[in-house]
Image 1 (cartoon, rainbow, N blue to C red):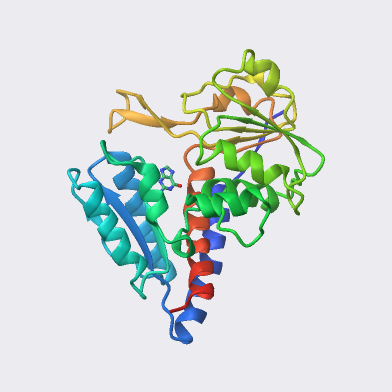
Image 2: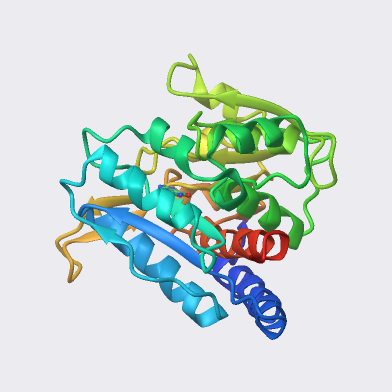
Length: 294
Ligand code: GUN
């Protein structure tokens, strides 16, 4: 078997086109949606992500001002900036790119973003609303993007066994939560496995749908995957490659070439989950502007 490719880039561009239509409709009614993507410091990967988010906003007609703060920004100064954005009527969504440089306290920062503007869905109020099954809660972009990918390839998780590898607050935990809920395009039986799970291969093979967000390059090999499984690879890892111009290449958490011979569907890296994260963030920003157009 050779797995079919899940073209996240194409699906994300369809969603971004839908977002552009919604943004134009809002603008006609006097509300240009606005997203503040706050970047603190000079982490190269974070810089790339924030630049891509801003560019996607501009293309969709969402106002996205520059919000780059120096690495030595204090906790107090960052909180003050967030408070300004909380009160800024041009800004409907706020995201603080993670990880923050040390010694900034991410948990406290997340608490300071007004829940109505928390388009990342990281504020405990939104986490709580999401976990209690409130369909209107902001859902974190990557898990929501994974569910949307399954929808667009018409693979309904209902009644299937979903194995998630990785228990981060950004991906593993919320995607396990979302796909086990009593909601359309969910209703799955979910196993949440992680680095301390004794035999990840044995658990992986249980998955009709295998979602990998474990942060280790090409960790999942073909023997860890159930034949015919749908494989969603959330990993983005730089590995040295002197053959390339940049000296590195990007690989996922799944050994793509080997696993594609056993899976039925698979996401590439790059071009799978990554573009969906951005598209869903834009969608959340529209949702925020529709609810609180002030
Ligand atoms: N860092 C890695 N993923 C994300 C994300 O979805 N949002 C933010 N703000 N930071 C991240």
